[in-house]
Amino acid sequence: MYPKTKRNNKLRYRGAYDLVSSLGKNWSTEVSDILVPKGMKKQCYRNAANAAWAYKNLRYVEGFALFMGIPISHAWIVDEYDRVVDSTWDKKSEEYFGVAFSTKFLSAIAFKTGMYGLIPDMPSKKFDPYLNGYPKYAILK
Image 1 (spheres, rainbow, N blue to C red):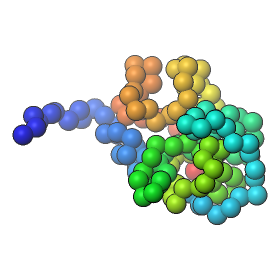
Image 2 (tube, helix red, strand yellow):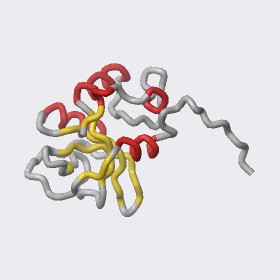
Image 3 (cartoon, helix red, strand yellow):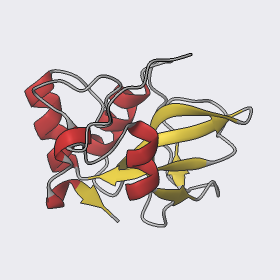
């Protein structure tokens, strides 16, 4: 049926799902006291990055959020109690599962690539976490 492809054994992660399931965690959907302005629709990576840079007590998280039971690539921020503050969607997701990144790393990659997002759909020579992983300072608990 389908041709067999060779698995690249040099890859640290096979893709976004593998990366997030290895490094991520569930985040609380309890209501947070923190209010941030909603950003533009369909710009979750930019909205979450801008909020994390503006509010030092918030952490930038990227991963998957369930929308009507379907996992959607998404970015959001969390407060000091690990509660989700979604700076894009009007209604919170049923569940958020993702990886928290330092704003220092977020800034470095945004500057290097000229784009938002730390779990790329299509890795490039400039930035390939599937092959190279992340530096220790990049991942927050």
